[in-house]
Picture 1 (cartoon, chains in turn yellow, brown):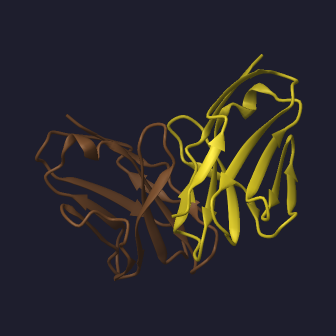
Picture 2 (spheres, rainbow over the protein chains, first blue to last red; picture 1 turned 90 degrees about the vertical axis):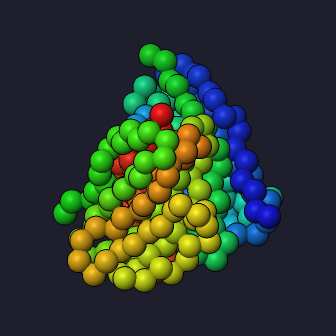
Amino acid sequence: ELKVEQNPLFLSMQEGKNYTIYCNYSTTSDRLYWYRQDPGKSLESLFVLLSNGAVKQEGRLMASLDTKARLSTLHITAAVHDLSATYFCAVDMDSNYQLIWGAGTKLIIKP
Amino acid sequence: NAGVMQNPRHLVRRRGQEARLRCSPMKGHSHVYWYRQLPEEGLKFMVYLQKENIIDESGMPKERFSAEFPKEGPSILRIQQVVRGDSAAYFCASSPNYNSPLHFGNGTRLTVT
C-alpha cells in the first residue's frame, strides 16, 4: 500500500527564515505534486515533479525530488507572511487522479 | 474563463437527510473527479466521471453515495441518509483529458448535525 508521510505537520516560523518540508513515500511513483491550500479554500497546484533530480522553483519556494530515496522536499527561502497556508504533497501511481495525499503541513509565518 | 464551480459552499443537513453537491467543470473540461477531505487530512479520491460515464468509483462507499455527470448540466454527488461521519469537505476537480493536471473547485463543506 502506498503511503505518503509529511513532516513536520505543523510549523511556526518567523519571517525571513528558511525552512524545509519533507515528503516521504513508500513505493515507486511516476509523479509527485505539491499543492497549497488556504483556510476554507481550494487547492492550488504549485509544482509537478516528474523525474529523479527534478528541481522547480517559483518565488521563495523550491521543490525537489529524489526518486531513489523516495523523498521530495519543499524549501522556503526568507519566508514571508503570505506563504502561511497548508502545504500538501501527493503521489500518483498510474494516473493523475488516484493521488495518495500526505496529511499536510500547516505553516504559520509570523511577522 | 471561470474555474471549477462548486455549490453550495456550505451545506448543513440533519442525520437521515439527503445531500446533493454540484460541480460545474471548467469550460472545455469533460473529466470530473470528486474527493473528500476530513479535517487535518489530505484528500481521498472518491470517483472519476466523464460525460455520462463513471470511469472509476473505487473510492466511493458502496452504499448511500452516488455520482453522475449528465450530458447537460453539472456533476452531482449525492449522499443519501447522511450520518455524522459524512461531515467533511468535498472537492471537485476537472481536467480536459486523462492524465492532464487537475483544477480544483473551492469545495463544499458538509456538516451533518
